[in-house]
Amino acid sequence: MCGIAGFTVANGVPIAIGTKNYATVISEMINALKHRGPDAQNTWNDTTTYLGHARLSIIDLSAASNQPMQSSDSRYVIIYNGELYNYRDLRLELQRVAQGTSNLPYAFKTNSDTEVILAAYQRWGVDCLSKFNGMFAFALYDTVEKTLFIARDRVGIKPLYYSYKNDQLVFASEVRSMLSSGFIDRKLNLEAINEYFLYQTVHAPNTILQDVKMLMPGHYMLMKNGDLHIKKYWDLNNYTSASNELDYQQTCAKTKELLFQAVERRLVADVPFGAFLSGGIDSSAVVGIMSKMSAKKVETFNVSFDEGEFSEAKYAKKIAEKFETNHHEIKLSPNDFLKQLPESLNAMDHPSGDGPNTYIVSKATKNAGVTMALSGLGGDEAFAGYDVFKRMAEINKKSYLNILPSTLRKLPASVMKAKNKSVAGDKIYEVLTQPKVNVSSAYPISRKVFSDSQIDGLLKNQKSNNLKTLISKIKETDKEHVLSYVSALEINTYMQNTLLRDTDQMSMAVALEVRVPFLDYKLLEFVLSVKDEFKYPSTPKKLLIDSLGDLLPDEVVNRPKMGFTLPWKHWLKNELKSFCEENMKSLSKRDFVNEQAVLNLWQQFLKDDARVSWSRVWHLIVLENWLTKNNIN
Image (cartoon, rainbow, N blue to C red; front, side):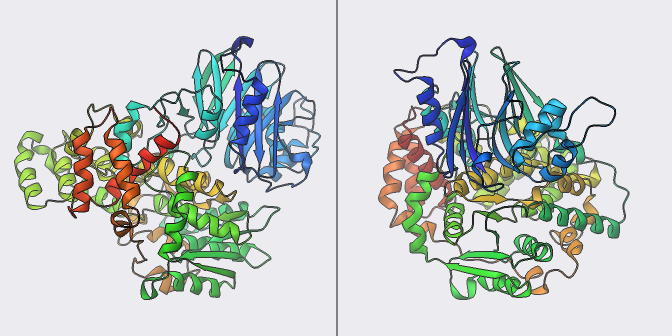
């Protein structure tokens, strides 16, 4: 796990960057990523291409595996961020002569997965991506053809930001590295502001900056002679209606097999590692499987804000005892969290309404002595664990509402809204007054922070909503796979652009690698082909629970949802009030907002208006803090 950065010089013609030379630029880009890769920082260049790498050593800790790395024939150069879980199998394949061809075995110089990618590209070209199982973002340069090949993993676990203008490409693992290059204008993307206000994030390929994009998951790009071509090589949506003729017992058995394989693949590391253990079903399942796969005791980490009877730590401890792990219970008080909040905001590479929690947990785990941790992230998205799955399934059953045109639905919807003066009431009104009442129209509304009418008041000019464009590209399924459709919506939107981005930026801020078995692409392909009646006949995540058999104790499987909620509302009105007020006032002066509406929103929160919870102002405070800190115009 590392940080990568690079750029091309368009046709050998220098781009104005003040008094800096290109060697200084790439060094500064990598220096901005040093927190991601504290073990080694190096650069490489020829006359047209500059590459840099900051290394966090996980596999093959020797200096021979430092990057940028050249192939054995010196033709190819790679910089790579991530882990290739099947690299050992591919290495064996690449050391054999391919049957029926003149391909020669590759002479490996290291034991790294990085060199396996080099060898795989040398053997199969861009088709090597179909053979990779892992999380990755890498750039591979052909010094003979002068071609730059950049790829991102299927699900989007590892980020890749880029800017392409004037035939020049600049790319990096983080926005801050892009900004440090001097190539990027520090201009706000006004197209993305509407989306950030609505969803507390910006959905790829857009970012909060005008000139910066994200390479989409499951895509690669080729750059040659100033021309950039982007292509998709994998699509999750191809599996949401796949034919699956297995009965329930066979489905459970296959799910278990794939999940065990996913965890086992992620246990390869040459550094101390462990697992996050919250005491919930997903993290407990990962720990239970790890304990059966590992010859050593599993290191488990539970970071809790202990509030007696409301603490989940007791469930984590029960799992730790069952699987005899070396358990680390890290208790923090709300004040401990509050003291570290400035650190977490400084660690934020791209503004987000979430993130501080992940930073605090990652830092505590890193300080406990591990460099890599497995997480239960993705279990809810794959196995229909969130309430949104149930809500969308109910919406799907209400297709009879479309007998009435939206104009006739407006009156009863208005009555319901008047009776239920809340965010939920506003959302029900929006759903019922859509041209069509269905999952594709209701889903983006369910994820909104503000209603359209509130956004109309806050922003001067409503811009296009990229989320609706993304959703339009996710094909709807048949009636037997509605939950798989919702899974695809969750994975392609909320998970990729909030959960995964926050996990990456906050864990890598403290040089901790996080691996996510539930997002193994083979597991996802199978689970999304499973019909609804196997997934949610009565309770959430039934397929996962039944697949695990007696692995987990009933106390964990059947326990009620609980957990201590940090006192954000109190903090925003007290300890953080001056910080929040200062940022809300500063935000209100921005050209794209209506000043009085922003100030009124803050006052509504202070007066306990039911429609303005702390989360509906916090992401705006974070946005302004980020824009100011990064000097964004």
